[in-house]
Amino acid sequence: MSTASEPQAGLLTRFLNGVERLGNRLPHITMLFIYALIIAMVFSLILSYVDFDYIHPNTGEKIKILNIFAPENLVTFIENSVKNFMGFPPLGITIVVTLGIGIAEGSGFIHACLRKLLSITPKKILTPAVVFISILCHVASDSAYTVLMPVSALMFYCCGRHPLAGIACSFAGLAGGFTASFTPSMIDPVMQSFTESAAHIIDPDYSVNVLCNYFYALGGTIFVILACWFVTDKIVEPRLNAFMPVDDKIADDNDTKMHEPSARENKAFTLGAGTAILLLVILFLLCYPEDSIMRAADGSLTSPQSAVMKCLVPFLFIFFALPGLIYGFAAGTYKCANDVIHAMENIMRMLISFMVFCFFAGQFLYVFGQSQIGSLLAIAGAEFLRDLGMPSGLTLFGIIVLTGMLNILITSATSKWAILSTIFVPMLMMLGLSPELTQAAFRVSDSAVNVSTPLFPFYPLLIMYCQKYCSKAGVGTLCSMMIPYTGALLIVLTAVLYAYWFIGIPIGFNSGFDYPSTMFPQP
Image (cartoon, rainbow, N blue to C red):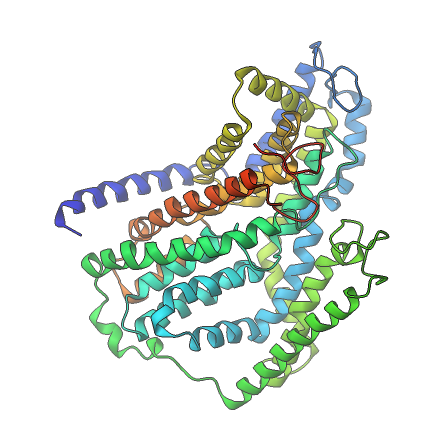
């Protein structure tokens, strides 16, 4: 890279720092929902006096906004406040799966899995292997950030490569490529719950499969790996080698040397990994018979009515918890049952702010749906888009672009989809696009932009990892590293989604491209 690019890098850093300052002035995400709740209630009062000509497609009746401030409606709202909180779609799902992850993380089993996977990786394919492992780590959710990034940096450094490139490609695979995945993860039931709730605004009987985007996610993995491989080796690492030298003191740092696990840890890992494999075999044997109790009445395994789909969240808990327990007691990280309880308590502390957010988000969803403001926006928006006469493919692309712009300032997928699903899903249903397709479009830009915004919650942690090797690294360093990944991921993930659509490949189980048909029409 020539020195002529240095002024551009300085300009980029100033721009990204300006975005960071702007984003830091935003209220806390929970406060945004409190404001949204108040605004929705006020609008319910104002719009209740307006006569709309829009007809609800399900009831056949004119849309009438319900005034939440009316005494009887306000009392009902207060009566349902606890129910709104406890019934908030992602609350129970997140808590249950996080408890299982807490057991596996507290025991050290997740750490051991990462080290094993990276230690057997051939040097010639280090970059794609790290991205591959990062995609596998989607099931570990946020806990992977504390392990994957420093281990990836260490692997790159030990192979004579720039350690920050290891952080960049693992970050891109984990957060940037979150739409692509080999296995279901905690985000799938969370997204599905919001999508199904939003679809009920138009069709109360509509059901969304937990794995409604799985085929698309699986197909996207190979393209995410190739894109991150190219960006890392051809763009990011050459630039780092030219402009971000590793500190001289690192060579003598004992922490940057790969330490071999003890014999006891190796034995514990064998037992833990063996337990995980055994659980998968047991699940397969339970599901295989045609008359299995894990199947739906029609024999389907992927139907929302099948036991295996209904039990997906508890299965994720068991899959993390049991191998974690076996590893913990075998390795000695768990001495007694109290240690296990403490591990679950420790990880639950991470969810305190999330649970506060859930309370107010649950109230907002109630008001937004009960007042019929959601139905009004969906129907009015659909008619506006229909009048514009844009092709459905272009409309969907607009969702991808808008989500990417919002993601610069609001990086939480749960926070954005809690609001956007109530608008996008029913609106596009009115245009004949399925909720599953709308969810897939949202996930494209939601994941790709994560890595290049300073407002991403793990940015401070990642900068700290970068500064271990390059003390001058800062926000601009990390942003400038990750922006090429954002561009590449947006291109490949969007291309794969449209390829599925044009060819007619299902994007997931029980998923179509149009509404209400479950067929797979061309866009």
